[in-house]
Length: 274
Picture 1 (cartoon, one colour):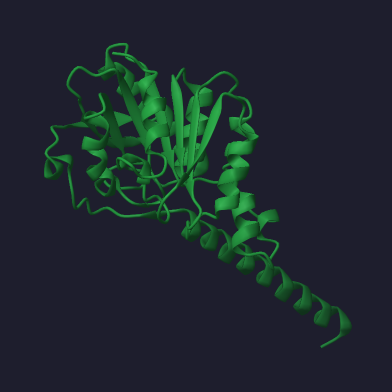
Picture 2: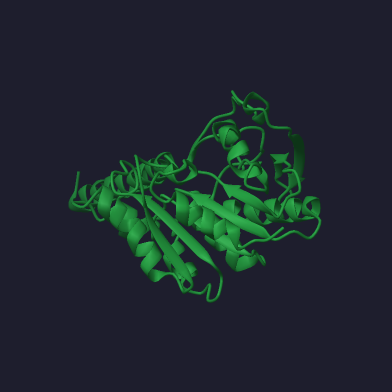
């Protein structure tokens, strides 16, 4: 084989290795971001909450699925943007936490999760949140709507607050951006420069001037580093409050009377009058 032939083989091998590496990186990124499950193992009924199934569609006609959980004499509605794993059933236990505080709750699944169709993408999740807001608004009868996001749902809820006229924003155990997470999870690798997603909640939260915002994060969070949650809060425009939560990732200690963050959560919700 001549020099030209050897060079061709080397270049071809490098090209194949590059393509294979890129495919591996995209699959690795998706595996880190999205962990959907189709099997819904719990419903609000198991927590003594009435609910109705809601089928709605995103702007690109992706079919979506949710639960409308009404409160008695409600003073608002919470659109809940959940984390990256499982499905709507993993949030069913939250139904009484909101309804007994006087808030309707709209639980729903991102595309690719539970009974929602499609495949999750960053743009798709933002579209799904807008559709969830609109479905909840149609059921709310003009009540104020709050966006609540936990973990990956944090940047989704923040983007929703940019896109729709919500009355308040609550963010639990979330992060400033996907790049910041990549730097903290893999400090020795330049993965933050190779991401196909941004989930830049910090940049979008900085634009939400005048919107009441409550952030909570546990210092013992074993999934999203506490420092990333603090950066997210620091970047957000006022008014805003940060509270230190108890427990690990997404434990939601502020729902428990006397626990860290409980008073701040109650005070935040109290501003929305019947």
